[in-house]
Image (cartoon, rainbow, N blue to C red; front, side):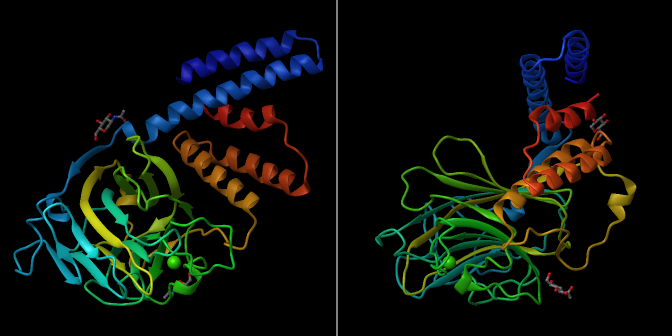
Length: 364
Ligand SMILES: *[C@@H]1O[C@H](CO)[C@@H](O)[C@H](O)[C@H]1NC(C)=O
Ligand SMILES: *[C@@H]1O[C@H](CO)[C@@H](O)[C@H](O)[C@H]1NC(C)=O
Ligand SMILES: [Ca+2]
């Protein structure tokens, strides 16, 4: 791919040299450059994950039909609590009744550094849209088997959670459509604010139409090289759609996986169908291997009150810097983005060929 890009760049270079300056020529050159960028991102998108990553299902951290590893004996890998009911086809965390809570928790602390979790779940009930609640949460935390106000788990938790929030508690804000998937990293001293749907502490998220749908709904959570990615397959198309992608998420080892759910005045059936953890094998440098993390944290969090333009710029920045990191031109891209951000702030429209030039140069 790099050679193709190099060749294309060569063609452009000669074309630019030969063509007399005119607006039409300028457009042609811009179009070519945009094409190169498209090429570059397609190939890098494949490479980042497929190249040197192999995955293995870890049975001790997984749960699937007929849920044999789940029980109260200490030899079982999973434990359940609250109103949880184990059925042949699913684990019902809560029935479609008011004020119920249920959860299942792994008994084994997890020391896998890079992993991917695929959860199949089903949320369904009698209530009309927005007259149902509250949703479910997937956890990797220091605490386990506790009751509480955060989707059936304790508040001030320490670790990672991914919420599938089906009820808009904070109805003053209309910028979110529910159900809404979001993620949070807690360090034990930060509260999840249920009345505000956690928007002051979340790392972002996406709307996800997962309730009362006839097809299977899946969530994918990947934690690889301190990068948290959440994707979903909820439209019956057997393909993952992006929801959230955050670098610089630091999680300690030895935490517990779990999934919990709660209903309040409003309710739903919250069913877990399968929970599958895959270990990802990732190459690391010796320095990366030595990093010891003691408290969960996130290097960078987008300000929820910031305007959406900034959010787009930041997520663009992160994806591009991730791709280019591999090719050692992070610095160039950062300079370019500083300029780009500045231009956007000033209200100037950035010429498209300019924005595509830098990332494609990085590929040479
Ligand atoms: C993948 O990793 C293996 C060792 O883990 C190494 O020998 C191989 O060269 C790597 N392949 C690529 C394409 O980086
Ligand atoms: C926990 O996170 C909050 C918010 O990011 C921060 O203000 C606080 O200092 C952190 N606590 C510790 C013990 O690091
Ligand atoms: Ca809510």
